[in-house]
Image 1: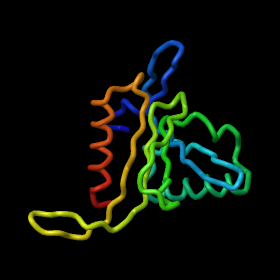
Image 2: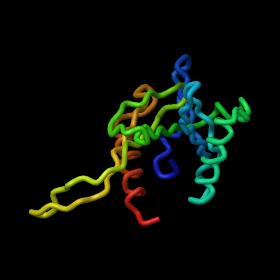
Image 3: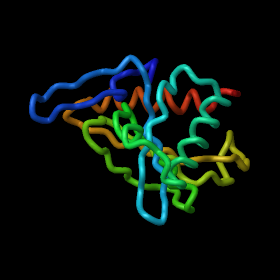
Length: 156
C-alpha cells in the first residue's frame, strides 16, 4: 500500500471520486458461526510482524467473544480474506464499498514446479486480488499485485 497506494483507497460511486489514504487500515475477514465480521487492523503500515500478529489475534478474540466495538467494524482502507484456511486455493473475493480492493490468500501448499529443465517442490500460496475498476486501472492493480508478491518473497 505504501509503494503502490492506488488500491488503498475509497471510491464514492455517486461523486465518482477516489480518495487515497496515507495510512493503512486493513479489514481482516473473520468467519464465525454467526457470519462474517470484518474488523479493522488500524495503522497496519507502522506495525512490525509481531504487532500485526498481536493485532489480528486481538481482533479475532474480540469478534469471537462479541466484545468488539462497532466502530472497529468499518473504516478500513483495504481488505484481506484468508479463505485458504478453509482449504480453498482460488476465489474471487468481493469488494465491499467504499473500499477499492480486497486481497485473498489461498491455501498454502507444496506444489511441484518446473525449474530450469527439472522439477522442484516449493511452498506456494495463491493470491487473489479483486478491485473496483471504476476506481483503479488494470495497470495500477497489476503493479500493486507485483509489489505484494515481491514483498512476500522477501525473507522476513
